[in-house]
Image (cartoon, rainbow, N blue to C red):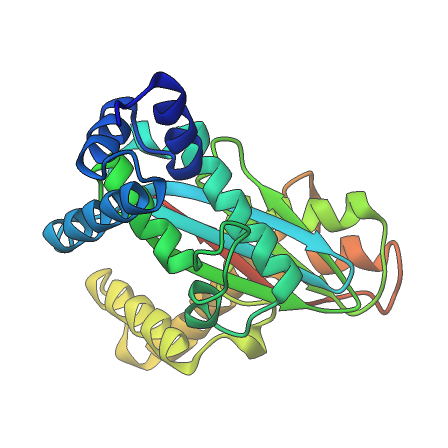
Length: 274
């Protein structure tokens, strides 16, 4: 049976593969759509195996919130050209939508969930590898839960944040905090949340700098403690200066709305940007 343009177009819609890939698959399958789809999928598996050692540093990062749940998904690829492709972005959006509706506990669970096509997310990404010829992977899946949540996607789909709060709040206030996380990249919510290893490292760096500056040994601990307090103000979310008003920090900004309002958790995912 001759391969028609209608058949090629139909297979392209089913698979997302290019015109020539669809034509060749249909010819090899004798115009059998199921066999043609299997040929395209096997091509994806072969390309995935061949490019498994390649670096996938580009990609698309998307986020969303719905009431008490917010999530980020990031699908990674090799080039910015593929990352900006509308089909690639749409696939990332489908994965995010699935995460929002299913709320899996881990990335591994998310990969095994089936999309509307009947293929799992893991299989869908592999199929897409066959279309683009690039390594792809679900690089990140993160979520937060709280009395209220917010998401923020920075222009270009390379950076996204999600934040959870202990109480409901105005959307703009929540968005301001999510943008703060994006812009200032805090390491923790409060000084008490900073890992001890980070604290020890910061204090040792401060001591080394003081020694190199010729400061007396008996003053090094005091200097290190001062440097640590500066680090807290720069790197913990609630103590950071508010990017929209440097006269107050984030904790003070939240308390202008509600004295009990605070952040309970946040996540920040970025690809190939500072």
